[in-house]
Amino acid sequence: MGIRTGEVMKTDTWEPKGIFDDEDVQMKLRIMHAVDRSLDQIKVGDLCEKVGISRQVFYRHFDSKYSLHWWWPTHIHKFYLIEVGRTVDWETGYSHHLKLLSLERDFFKVATQYTLNYPNERSVMPHYRKCALLETLQDYRHVDIDDELMFCLDSWVKTETEVLTEWYRLGTTPPSREAAEKLAWVAPKMLYDALSME
Image (tube, rainbow, N blue to C red):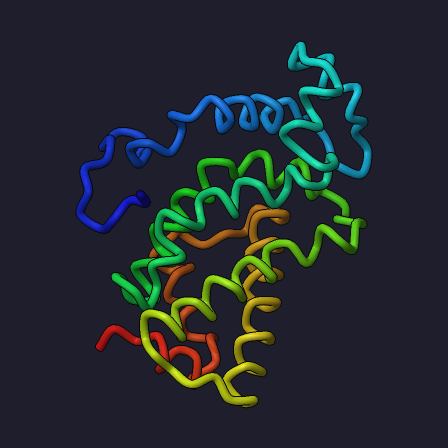
């Protein structure tokens, strides 16, 4: 279902086939693109008015305004990042994921300008990543998860999310290949080795 390395992509804007095709995805993007200031400062009613939808339609797509911040990363996660340790190496998975994440660079810079003050929302991506990595380790790599590896995994998913959030919030994201190398370089060695494709 997801895109695999080598699949044809549009060369001018680097958009993977199928990523925008779904009507639900298109509506979520319309809502996301209506954000013109920090999520802390915007109201759901403002977004609805700008997009021309009702509050019911908004809440059909998002639990809260803060859910907008995590929707795009979790949506694109399934295209490449989830494939790290399955079909691609760390650097390749991160590089392609960062290219997709960068398609919405302007949203992240504006939406997270101040803070993300919703504690429940801050755990969305780390939880999502932890589940995916556990699945990869157990079902694809057949690795026994001991306390040490679980500690590495728990620490890494929080660190990864914080680094990416800061890069995009501050507009300091390195080019995708360089950013991918930096992320892979600081990943815990035990986790990196367990998901290595060598």
